[in-house]
Amino acid sequence: MTLQQTSPRTPLLRDRLDPQRWADVVRVPTSSPPRTAVARAVITRALSRLPLRVLLGDRVLGRGGPLLEVHDPEAFTARLARDGLIGFGESYQAGEWDAPDLAGTLTVMAEQLTTLVPPALQRLRRLWEARQPAGAGSEAAARSNIRAHYDLSNELFGLFLDDSLTYSSAVFEQMPARWEQLERAQHAKIDRLLDLACVGPGSRVLEIGTGWGELCVRAARRGATVVSLTLSQEQHDLGRDRVRAAGCADAVEIRLQDYRRLDPERDGRFDAVVSVEMIEAVGVDHWPTYFRTLDTMLAPGGRVALQAITMPHDRLLATRRTYTWIHKYIFPGGMLPSNEAIDEATRAHSALRVTESEGFGTHYAETLRLWRERFTAHAAEVAELGFDEAFRRMWTLYLAYSEAGFRSGYLDVRQILLTREDEA
Image (cartoon, rainbow, N blue to C red):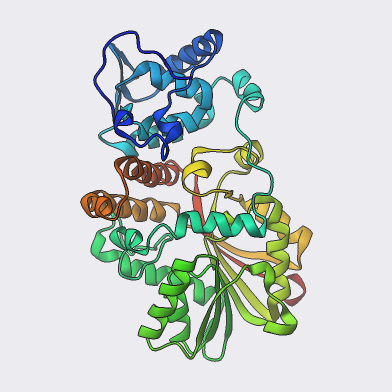
C-alpha cells in the first residue's frame, strides 16, 4: 500500500526511481492511524528538543543549529512510524528530506541518540523493530555479504579512496586533515599496526581481510611473508595485481578463502596475525569462532593486532539483534563490537588477552569527511559507472552517518594487541 496524497506536491526523487531496483524507497508505507499519531507526536517532540533548525512543512522546529528540511512531512512521518531508522534512511534516498550540512545534522542527532525517544517507547521497540535474518555470519552469508559491498566496483572505490586504496581509518599527524595527507596517514596507520604485531624480517604474517593489498605490500617490504584472506573477488584480483606491481609477489599470497577454512596442519602457524576492520563483518554469533581461529593460527610467542570499530557496550546489548538501514543497504550481516565484548569473547573462547588498546575515533571522522567530499566531487563519474541518484544519496548518507558516529563519540576505532596470557 502507498500513502495517498491529499494535495498536489512537487515531484520528488522517488518519482523518478526504478521501482524494481528501489522498491522500498519508491513505496511510501502506511501505518494504522494510532501508530501514525504516536509517531508524529514522538517525531515532533524529538525534533523540537534538538539543537537543529527543522523545516517540517509549514512548521519550524528545533532550538537552532544545522538545517534539516523535510520536503514531504507525511511520507517522512509514515516511514519513521513504520520502519524507524530504516525509514529515516530510505526517506533521504527518496529525496523527502535534505540537510545542507548533512554530517553536522547527523552529528547533532547522534549526540542525542539515546534520549531522542522516551524510555517507555524504547522498551517497546522490540515489538516492532526489524530483526536480523537467521544465518547472518554463516560462510555462505559471509560470502554474499562481503561481495554485496566490496564487489560493487573497484572503479567506484577508486573515485573516493586515495592511491593506497585503503578503506579504513587513517592516522593523521595533524587535524583538520587535508586530502593530500591521506595516503601518508594511511601508511602511518598500517605501520603502527605492523609495529604492534612486531612484524619484521622473517615474520610469517596472516592477514584476515585483504582490502586491496596495501598492508601486504608494506609487510613484505619489511621482509615478512604474508598469507592474506578475502571473500571479495574484486579485491582478490586487484590486490594480486597491486602486489605484483609492487614487486612483492614472491612474499605475498592472497587467497579467496574464509578464515574458518584455515588449518594449522596445512597452513602452519604465524608469528603475527593482523586484521583491519574485519571483525565488524563477522557477526555476533561467530565472534567465538573468530577468536578461536586467531588463537589456533598463532605461533607460540606470536602477537595479534586488530583494528576495530567499537560501540558502547550498553548499545551493543540493546541493538545486537536489530536490523538497521546500514544492514539493509550497506553492510549486510555486520555488527560492531564493544571493548567489553572483545574482552569477554577472547577470555571465553581463546587463550588470547587484550594487552594494549588505543582509540583514535576523531581520526576516523576526518578520514570519512575526506572520503565523503571526494565522493561528492566525483558524482558525475559515479553516475557514469552506472550508479543512479538513489545510490549516490545512499552512499553519501552512509559516509556522513558514519562520520557523525565518530564526531559525536558514539563510535570509536581502536588498534588492539592480543597476546596469550601464559606467554605474557
